Length: 371
Image (tube, rainbow, N blue to C red; front, side, top):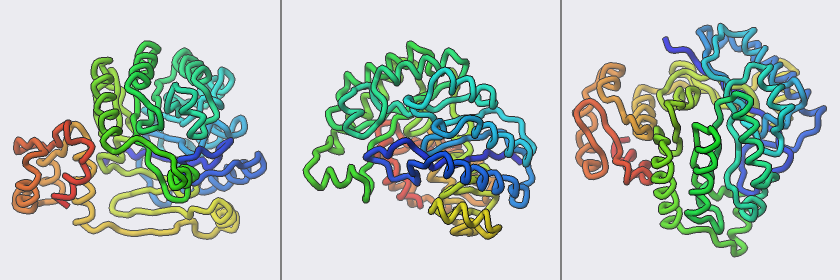
C-alpha cells in the first residue's frame, strides 16, 4: 500500500482577498491557540482512521505563515507522534507579507522542506485590486529568502486578472526561473458567489473574457516551456522533476488524511468532510463530539469516474492498463462510446489516454464524454 499524505487546514489570514471563498477568518492569537489545541487533539485520534505510513505533510489555508510562533512545529510534532512518518515532502503555504528570514528559520527548524508562496502577480496595481497585502518588492524578497534558505519553492501565478498582459506573465516566469524557483502553479481567477469580487463584477467591474483568459493561459504555457518548466497537470509546472509529491496523491487517488475545519480526506473507499464553521469545529473537539459533516463510501462506479477525471488532468494521462487491472474492467467495453466522441480531443495508444495539450482548458468537457 502506498504511503498516505496528511493535509492540515489553517483558517486564518491577516485579511481576506477579494476573490477568496475559502474558510478563513482574521483570528487573534487566543482564537488561533484554541484552534491549534483542537487541531492537535483531532490529529491525535488519526490512528483510528488510518494505521499505515505517511510520507507527505501539507499545511495550507488560509495563511499558515500568519500563525503564532511555534505553531507549525506543534502541528508537525503531532503528526509525527501519531503516525509512522518519514516525510519525503513537507510543504507550508505562505504569503509574502508574512514570510521573512525569521519565519524561514522557524519553518526550517520545524522540518519544512517546501514553501508554496501566494505571489499571484508582480503588478502592484493588480495586487491592490484583488486585495493582496503584499507588493511586488515584498514578493520578490520573499522568493529570494525562501530559495536562499534552502527550501524547494513553488509560486502561485493567477491568470485572468484585470489589466493583466502577456508581458506581466513573461516578467513573472523570468524572475522565478532566474531566482531558483522550480515549481509554478498557474491558476485561472474564478469569480465565486458571495465574495467581494463577485459584487464588484455585478457593479460593473469588467474582467478579461474567457477567450482572453485562454490566450493568457496558452501564453503562460509557452513561456513556462521556454523556461524549461514541464506541465505535469493542467495548472502545475515544474523544473528538474520537482512535482508536488503531496498533490500527486490527490491526482492518483492515493489515501490522504485531512485535519482541521472544512478539511476533506480519503481512506480507501471512505471519504469524510469536516464541519466548515470554525466555532463549531473547536467546540465539537473540546466536547469530544464528532467533527465530520459528512462521511460516505464511494461506489465502484464513483471510483472509476474519479480515476478517469483525475488521470485526464495529468499530462502523463490516464493509465488505462492500471485502470483495467485495478477495477477488473475492459476500458473499450465500458467507455467505447465516450472514446469515439472524444477522439478529436485525445490521444490514445491502447495503454494511456491523454487530452491533447491544445484542449487542456476544455478538459472538463472532454472528461464528461466518459463519465
